Image (cartoon, rainbow, N blue to C red; front, side, top):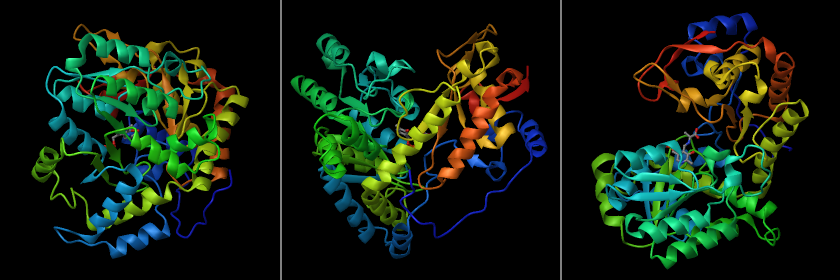
Amino acid sequence: MIEPFRIKMVEPIRMTTREERARLLEAARLNVFALHADDVLLDFLTDSGTGAMSARQWAGVMVGDESYAGARSFYRLEAVVRDLTGYQHVIPTHQGRAAERILFSVATRRGEVVPSNTHFDTTRANLEYGGVEPLDLVIPEGREPRARHPFKGNIDLGRVEALLREQADRVPFGMITLTNNSGGGQPVSLENLRAYRALLGRFGKPLVIDACRFAENAMFVKLREPGQQQRDVKSIAQELFSLGDACTMSGKKDGMVNIGGFIALRDERWVEAARNLLILTEGFPTYGGLAGRDLEAMAAGLEEVLDESYLRYRLRTAEYLGEKLLAGGVQIVEPTGGHAVYIDARAFLPHLPAERYPGWALCAALYLEGGLRGVEIGSVMFGKRLDDGTETLHHVDLVRLAFPRRVYTQSHFDYAAEVICELKARASTVRGVRIARQARYLRHFTAEFDWA
Ligand code: F0G
C-alpha cells in the first residue's frame, strides 16, 4: 500500500500519555465528540472534509476567482463536472446536505416515497423533513456483517419492482448511494445500476445518485466486476453517472476538499426551481455558498481522485487494516469497504450486554488505550429513550474508523492495528457505560456517560 505521494507540508501530532487521556476522557464525560481534536493521536471520526489537499489544489486556491457573479472558477468546476457526469446543469452548494435539501425541496412532495440502497442519515433526515418516506432496499447480504459479497451496496431490484408495481405514483425518483456508507462503504456494481436504471425507466422515473464516494465505487468495479479490469477508472465513473439523471455530491469526500458540494442535473426539469432556492439560502448560482478558491480546489480534486494509483492505495488501506484486525481476532464488517473499517463491538466485548453500549464503551477504550478516535454506530446513535424510561436498541453495535484522505501513513495504520489488537487481548477489562445526560434528538453528539 505504498503511499503514492510525497509529503510537502506537515502538521504535528501531539503525543499524550494514558494518564492524560484518562483525565481528558473523564472531562469529556466519556464522549469522544467532546474531546479537543488536538488531544487525539489518530482521528478516524470521519473521512468527510478531513483530507489533505494537493500542491495543485493549493495552487488553485491562490488563483481562485472571487467575483460574485460569473467567476472563472465556477466555469472551471462546471467543465470538470460536465465532463465527469455528462450532466449539463451544475449548481454548487456548500456541502452535500445543502444539495440534498435543495433538490428534495423542488423534486419531492409530502406523502411520497424514495427508494435507495441505504439513505445516509442527512439524506434520510432531509427527506423526512419534507414529509417523504425514505426506503432502504439494499440486498440481504448488505445487512449481514460477515457476508462476503463483492457488491454489498447493490439495491434489491425485486423489492424496488414490487414498490413500483404497487405505488408508482408515490415515487418521484429512485436514489442510490455510491458507495453505500451506512452499509460499511460497500460498492454498487455496474450491472446492478444498469438494471435499476432500466427498471426505473420502465416506470418513467429518474435516477438520482448520491455520488459522495463515486471514485471509490468506480475503482471497486474495476477490481471486482467481471470484464471491467482493462478499463480506466474514469470511463467507469463516467458510465456510472451516465446511468443517472442527476446527482447530489459532498465534495468533502471524493471531491478531496475540506468544504464544498454540488447538484448536477441532466435536463431542465428541476433546474430553475433549484437555482431560485439556492439564491435564497446558499448564494448566487455561480458560487453557491462557497468561495471561488473552494470551487477551484474542488475542480482539481475531482480530477485527482480518479488517479488509479491513489485509488488502489486508498482501497488497500482499509483492506490492510482489516486484515491485521482479523488476524488479531477482531471481527469487522467484511469485506472492507472504501473509506472505513467497521469493528463489531458486540463480538469485541462479549461480556457487555447491549444495554451497556458496547460500541460506545469500545470507542472510549480505544481513545484511552491509544489516542484513537472512531465513532459509535449503534444503540447510542440509533437507540432512543422512550417516555416511559425504557430504551430501544439498534440491531448492531459497530465502531467506524473512517480514514481521512492522504493524511495518515502506513505506520499510523500499523500503530492503530497494534492498539486495537492489544486491547482485544484484554477486552474483558473494558467496562460498559451508562448514559447520565442526553438530549431528545441526535443524543450521541452531546450525551454524557459514566462507566457502568
Ligand atoms: N451522503 C453520504 C453518503 C454521506 O456519507 C454524507 C456525509 C452526506 C451525504 C452528506 O454530506 O456532510 O457534506 O453534508 N457523510 C459524513 C460521514 C458526514 O462522516 O460519513 P455533507
